[in-house]
Each structure stands twice: as C-alpha cells, then as structure tokens.
Length: 447
Image (cartoon, rainbow, N blue to C red; front, side):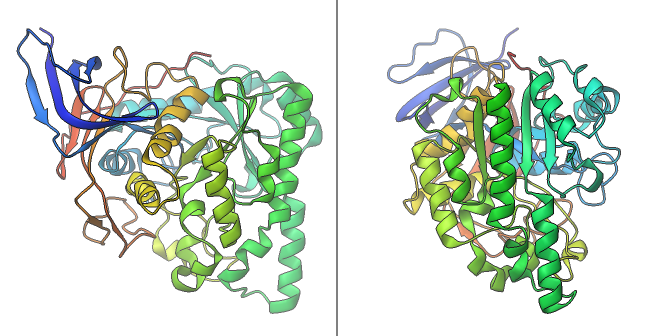
C-alpha cells in the first residue's frame, strides 16, 4: 500500500519563485505540488509547515568524508549524518582517500560502504593520476558523475603534471573532468621566497600569498585552454580569485556550457582579514584571498559566471590544524552549516534566497545531469528540507555533529534553523532527532 504524506502551508522556494503551497509525497517521490486548493481523496499523514521554508534538498558536489583510510577525521556515517542535519540530501565525495579511488574496483568499494552507512544520497568521483587513463575509460558514466584531477599539490602523488597525460585526458575522456587548479611550480617558488624571507615558521597570513592568485589563474586558465582545444566538459572547483572569473561565461544557459565553475562557502564568507581571528581554522587550498576577491565571487554568483555553490567539507582533527603555514593541514568541516550560512548571506543582501536554491540545489542537478533530483517537481525524488527563518542557530561545541568535533563557525549565530530533512520521502532528521534506519541511494546520471 502506498504511503502519502502532505507538507502543507509551506513557503516554497523553487525554480526562481517563492510561493505559499503544499507538497504531497507518495512513498519515495513527490506526487503533486499545490499552489492553491488541495484536492486529495485518499487518506494521508501531514506536516503543517506554516511560517516555514520548504526547499529542495541541497546537493553538495564536493565533500571529503574520509572513508576509507582516514576515518579518525570523519567517516561516511558521521559526516552524512551531519549533512542531513544541515539540509544536504545528496553528496559527491572526492577520491583522495586511502587507498585512493583511482581504479574502478576501489571506487565501487566506496559505493558499497555508502550503501550501508550513508544517511544521504551519495556518489563518488573517480581519481585521475599520471598513469590510470585506461581505468578512467572503464568508468560507467551512468553511475559515476565525473573524474577528478588535482592540478596542484593538495594530495601529494595524485598531482597530475605530465603534459602528455593532460592532453590525453582532455582529448580522450568524454565524461566531465573536475579539477582542483593551483600551479605547483608557482607555489614552490613562493614557498622558497617566503622561507628565505621569514624562515621555516611562516605565519598563516602568508598562505594566500604562497597559494597565490597567480598560482590559481595559471592552472585554471591552462585547464580552460585544454578544455576549449578538445571541447571537453570541464568543471573547475572552488574558485578563489577575481582574476579567474574572466575564464567563465555568464551568457550561456548552464545546460549548454562546456566549461563551468564552483565556489565554496568559505570563499564567500571569509577574507584574508579573518586569518588574524581564526588562524589555521580557515586554512584551505585554494587559500581564502582578499575582500575584493570575496565580493567579486559573490557578484559572479549573481551574474551566473559561477554555476554551483559547495562546501568542500574536509574535516581534520584540531591537532592536525596546528603549526605554521606550511605544517597545518588544509581544509575544514562545513556541511552541517552550509545552507544556513548561505541563507544568512542572502539575508544580508548579497543575493536572493532563490539564488541560493538555484546554486545549491538546481544547478548541481543540471550540471551533473542527476536523474530526478534537485527540484520540487512531481515525479522527482522527495529530497526536501524545512527551514525555520525565524529561529536562530548558534554553533557550539555541544551541537556540532562532525566526528572531528569543531567548526570554523563556532560562536556564530545564524538567523535560520534546519528543522526537518526528507531523503527519498523518508524523514531522516526532525527537530534534532535522526531516524537511524534511513539510508540514501546511489545517484544516477543521464549522461
């Protein structure tokens, strides 16, 4: 017997509109969306969402859940649990685990783990190395969204720096190529310069000067050049500079773009002025840059030069974040508070709430061609989030759900609270309580 559930009287934000309405769920799916009169003859359970925002579930296209091999920092169970508490119903995890996901066999083992452990829907990117192109060609584009290439030194031996390999990947791989772009030669030159100037104990404030605008632009522009040459599908992760924006186009609909870009929440929220307060807690690769870069990224999001917003959720133990600029680990946990941080930026006038939903929910679904997700539409999976716009959330050590136990947002008060999250029609999170039996599904792609 089919199970019906009505979410009524909600303020729905979807497809560029905000309107009062109700959504009927039938098992895993959205059965109907009502803007006016509700006409249902069958019996159903209901949730009264008066005064609340009903949103599509967030799709985070870049996370590091650390499993397998780095599970002292986080794992699929703990980090997907934090994800659904933050309104994220689907995620795409990166290949730099241990072992690295650079063969189809290892990649499929990660999917098997997620099937057992993930509260949210899941997908995993295949990693590129200098010598695994034959493995890349085995990947089924129906089941895997993209291949991930590090054109920078964030992950050691996953750095792809062989020119012949780069040309082969862009010319022979038909799947989307996702890149982390920072030029290694420029970074090493900058490290040596600041070591000569300051010694080995370089302060964190120099991180954006070492992983500089030049390092980012040189690598991003090279990737864009290769993609243009071979007509590849290229998606550049975590833009951090105004200069890189010249590489992207705002005049083409997303479905027609061959070269696209993502920005992460920390690059929209923080600037280099914040290193004095937060120190290594806001050390990421690419580095957080200037206030003018931050404002340019916001403007590019509004103009659609930037297509997607993600978290780059990358937990480390605080002990791993200690030390000087060259010693402290790069990355931080964000997924539990990403949606409410973006809604806060919207409230302070940086962009509209509709734009937040476009860039966090609709655009990832369109870009990666995810099947039947990312929108509140009949026939789509019921991945939904209720947010109270009149209830604040203060981030404290007591309510952080990450395995690593800390957040760069500790002490921050946001003006919205995630109340309820549905994954495939099942209420997985409700007012601080989890249904520990719910598991997400593997994302599928119309490639």
